Amino acid sequence: MYIKMIPALLLVAVMNPTDGATLNPVIIVPGDAGSRLDAVLNKTSVVHYLCRKESRLYNIWINLLELIPPVIDCFIDNLRLVYNNVTRTTSNSPGVDIYIPGFGDTNTVEYLDPSIQVLAAGYFAKIVNSLTEWGYVRGQSVRAAPYDFRKAPNEMGVYFIRLKNLIEDTYIMNNNTPVVLLAHSLGGCVSLYFLNNQSQSWKDKYISKYVTVSVPWGGTIKSLLLFTSGYYFESRRMRRLERTMSSSAFLMPSDKFWKSDEVLVMTPFKNYTVNDYKEFLNDLDLDSAYQMRRDTEQLIRDLKPPGVAVYCVHGQDIPTPHMLVFDSDRHRWPDDHPRYVLGDGDETVGVRSLTGCLRWVGQQQQDVNHQVFPKEKHLAILFGDYFIDYLKSILFQNN
Image 1: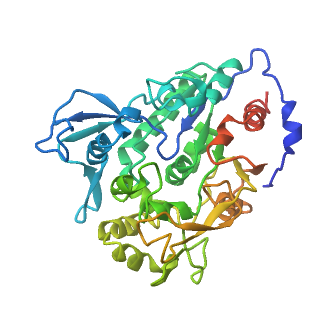
Image 2 (image 1 turned 60 degrees about the horizontal axis):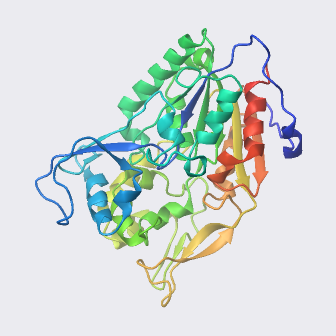
Image 3 (image 1 turned 45 degrees about the vertical axis):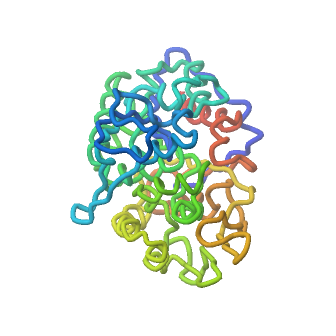
């Protein structure tokens, strides 16, 4: 086993596909908020008079019209999850059914908003377009496995059955050719959990390579924003949704990556470390979130090797939050956005978490390849020519 570093400047000159060669098919596993969601409503009550009680199937994520105040309150109530501390699972908001469209296809991960299909607003659009230029065919040799990103892997049993069937089906569709899994961000954590639960003989037969991009192997400090001030647009409103998602708890920083005396959240009243999650979430009156953290903290905590050839890719050399600081005045706990103590990373995930894949060196027989693209951000890396050229070199290196 070895670590293979390929200088970025050499990646411009990559191999062209060999005539008649069988391409290893690619299956995309998207990241957090990277799958389109559809909804059907049949509610008995609503949070605002503008909200609908009933609807046919419609796109709820991502739909920019749903994010305009005060309609965003309808969106949040429709997309929130409800935790059951007996079954230790979440369910949809009462009267709401959520569906993940496009399983096996790529369109729903190329463009998350179906009404805006321009490259600048895309997700995997540039990558899929590049794959088709290299000889790949949508729906046959390049496919996608979107999922309900609100949930952590412990609630994704049905999805994993579908993912396994998709891999096997894609293998057969492409002349019994092993598959390349291409996973971004949370999708890397989800797919690692999946691979850890497959037999080695199955992986040897069906998986050729595992390409991971911008993966928070040990969690991310920014996930703590989801429980405090909120992270995305209209953050105070959106945190009402983010706090109900088991994937938010799943992405909290791991005690395998942060020391017990490292402060993650500083407030005028107390400081919180990885050993203080119960107190942290209880102080926010979020007992359900703490229960979800208990449900998810062990899922990939030990970072068991995937047992397949790994190509671990990420950006770095970008200031990235390493601590959240809530001052007593301008950055009030927990409602105002905190200031950051910054360190190295890809703007979203710290470098210590991004490089978690290096722990597999010497732990598995298969190669562990590591490629860093300086100054490439967590999401923007998917649009970068250097990464796309590197992906091409991976796909065609044996042809």
